[in-house]
Image 1 (cartoon, rainbow, N blue to C red):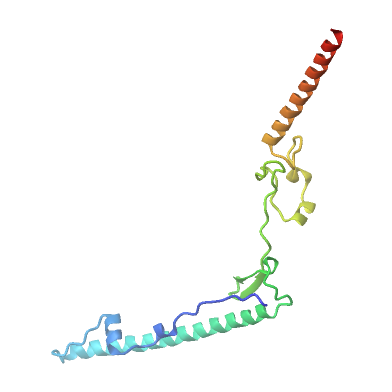
Image 2: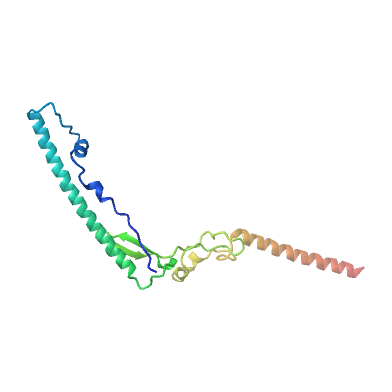
Length: 185
């Protein structure tokens, strides 16, 4: 099944004329029934001129909306005709507007996760966050930290390992001394 990208179209009714009352409210002209002088005629001519301008503006807006909708439909057909229509996380697409004003579909790469400590699972500080193949193209200094277990364990876990190893060695020495003392008796 193809990945669908949905777009909201603006309501075309908002650009259409709704009659004299709505435009008189819109432009601030209220017809004065009592005053039928030249001033009222000038207001009427201004009103009709503004009304004509608004209608042409609305027509232009509708044409632009139709062009945008056509572009979006073209993009949608491009998206639907990609070779793999599998809706997987590796097949995500986003629509991007180019500097030329054209809408283009681009494949989105999967989000990279930070490398984590093998013991406690916290993200390792000082190591680049990349997709697995990306580590092949960066230097060793960006992949490791200059310490024992630099690229796989965090500092706290290394400290715990060192202390644990020291205590185990001390325990072995104590056992050996006790065994020798028991043999002398």
